[in-house]
Length: 366
Image (cartoon, rainbow, N blue to C red; front, side, top):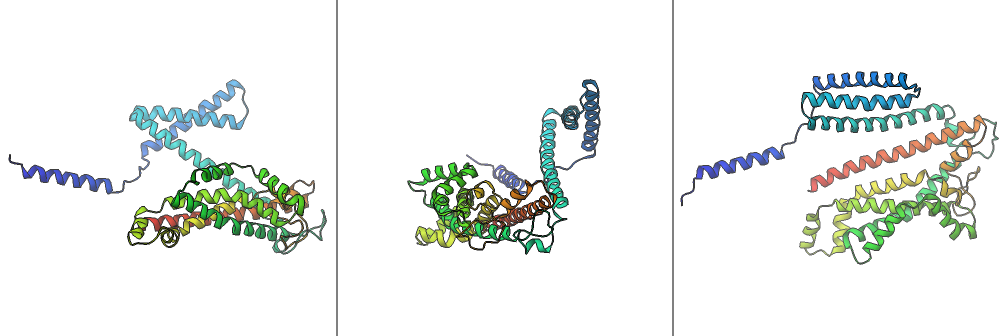
């Protein structure tokens, strides 16, 4: 039986063309003039419906009117796109608008919060705020600062990080690389700890340590460690899962034992991601207030010894001052809140940068 070589060649050419088309990056859909016109018409129609409904029903709430405006605009936009194209394209446009709207809402809330903190916190923020504590100022006396709270925050978070990092990383390595008999119960415990309320961590440390040894910064660090451990463990495990298997297989094929493969291949490759996991854990713990009330307790004096005596931190500093009916103390609290939010934002931006760098490194390894 003769085979037509022309058909075979044509079929192979078609397969290569299909593969090339699949490998070619697809361009994102761009907004056209018709889409912009349809969106503008939908917004105008939705606004007319919302204000008419407000007049008919006698509603005066801005939020209610805005919600009616938004949903009515979506309905009109769906109808216009469906008539112009088809129902599937209309549904795709609606989902796109909903996703972009949710993102814009979250971003606007974040921007509003930061702007509000800047307006409230900047007037009382000065150089002395970082070099003075509250031991020599009264409720109505200008001056004072958060030096004691900054020192307490740094010491407590540093102690918690020193304890958490080796335990969390080794646990993640055991869960992902070894996956022994205890992997399932260990993962169950980590998942259960992820939903642990922060006040429960404070009560645990209060019962075990504070009730017998008194309040201290190390007790607060222990409570933060309990909260950081599941976050860093789960994030580290997910990072280790992204390491390509061919790196492990190549090292094992060369005769390296598994522990050396993990130590010399897996962990160095995932180092940036593991640092990101640690930063996320620190950002999770640095703003906790409830467990610190039962462990560190807070103080107006600068206590550089976390092993003895109550110690302040930024969340306790803000919580204590914002409750007082005094404008001077409230202004100090807003400045402390601004520093705390700025610290958390710096940590998250650093984590995002390191995460992007880790993804690029893994992409090159693949």
